[in-house]
Length: 125
Image (cartoon, rainbow, N blue to C red; front, side, top):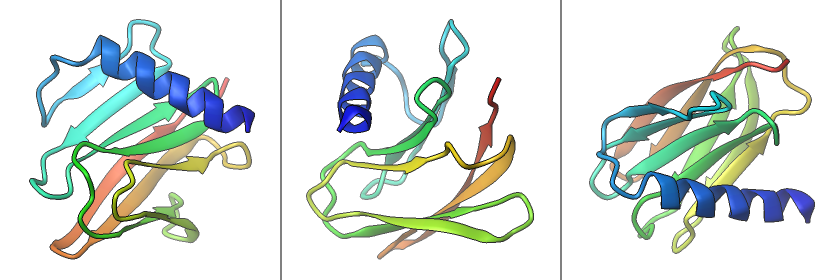
């Protein structure tokens, strides 16, 4: 429950701070704890956040999902780690990274119109 509350607060603060941001950009928070990337895909546009302090990778849909999106987390060696679904009508999915090591991970976003592959770097202190 605490993680869910932390995610909601994180999304609220992020949207307030970056409401005027453009798509297809990379943003780095001034505290360098949050790295944000947005990827333009008209019907499946998502924002990907890595929150170091809460140890979460958050995937937020920019628009209301008309179809389910399957999101897979793959480690630096190409090994499948986890899978989650961003359900139709939902706007939020996340991966808990407490048990993961530092490194570059891959997110594979599978939707009805195609597949997108994005990289996320996990850096823990």
